[in-house]
Amino acid sequence: MKDGSESKISLVPYKGVRDFYPDQMSEQNFILNTMRKVAESFGYEEYSASLLEPSELYKAKSGDEIVNEQTYSFTDRGGREVTLRPEMTPSLARMVAAKRREIPLPLRWFSIPNIFRYENPQRGRTREHWQLNVDIFGVSGIEAEIEVISVAREILRSYGAKDEMFEIRINNRALQNALLSSYALSETDKKNVMKILDRKDKMSHQEFEEKANVILRSNAPEFRKLTEARDIDGFLALAPEAVRQSQGASEVRELMKVLKEGGVTAIFSPCLTRGFDYYTRTVFEIFDTGENNKRALFGGGRYDDLLDIFGAEELTAFGFGVGDVTMRDFLETYGLLPKNQSSTHLYICVVPDTAFSAVNRASELLRQKGVNVAVDFSNKKIGDQIKTAVRKNIPFTMVMGGDEFGSGRFRLKELATGAEETLKLEDAADAILQKTSSAKT
Image 1 (cartoon, rainbow, N blue to C red):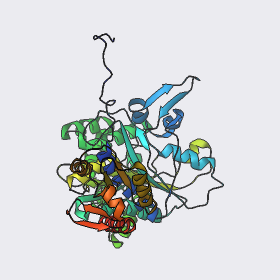
Image 2: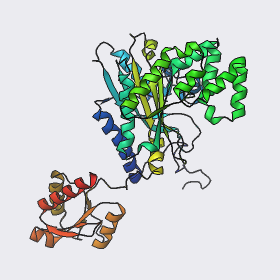
Image 3: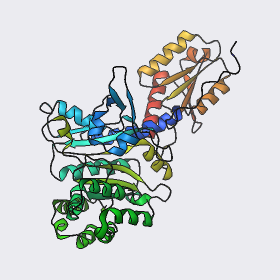
Image 4: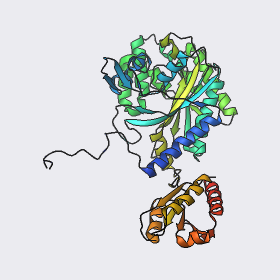
């Protein structure tokens, strides 16, 4: 007998992670499968990697905040320092660098891994989430930006989102670097300015002003005005001449021009930085415009130098990530999550004392025709078995007993409408597949 004083193992999952019961898994599959379908429609191929990586991989390029404050890192039994991946891009760069001369370019890859960050769980943030990563390598021109941003926009549209529900925001690290260089800042001060820019929306106006004054001193007033610019032309009108003539300035203007010509509206966001150190030029976010969920959904940019940490030949790259948690919040906010529907098409209700072998042969025939079948061997009343099917959101039921097997005809019921038909098994299979297929489209 167990001592009553012993503590019981908790039924609650680890803080910040989730269990997925079947109805929640159905929603998760809808979210991730839509992402996968759109990525593949643009010619992207799926890849994967281990969730464990040497910690040095992230120390090299991810950024101090990610490595020092947000990773799950530990020393394994071999004395190696390892980390549960907090993002996928360094693993991707490692994989590409390993076969740099074998992979045909341009390379279009995507993945949907689970990633881990030690964050304070709140709406839109968990300690484990799944993230779609879409990346293109070997295209140095603006075509890479246009294509990848188009993939992100098409994902939202595939969920049923309208353009007014989200906003595409653009900036450029080269433009920002040109501005900071014009102020003759040290590398440390440049990094500190980027940090306060990244967190501006989370600070009070006074706090931002105080931090800017400490770092930028006499340049702080001009800098604050630049962060409030509403478009690229307004920003450049206030900026020093070196910034106006910079490569970053021309890249922003060209990108926004080509996006507009393609029917895609984007805005220049002077405070957009993205938190990772490896971005080199264009950065972008897609922001939810809803009052209840104002936050970035997608984030990404160009990272042309990431392979250098492996000593590999330089290779241009552009990509983005989007998480399942923020996407689910977005879809829920706008009522775009579909009603949960079981992947099982048919629930067979078995009349008590019916021969198991007969039911098994019939269900196997239906499966061979492509119907997903669950059989109830509970010996409950037929009405109770049908109630079970309703609770499981299974669209069709079929009763099987001696009379049905004697006649070779079975009663098929569509639970949503209550409509019933008495059919041969082959005909029932065709009817189920036709109706479930039309329901998906």
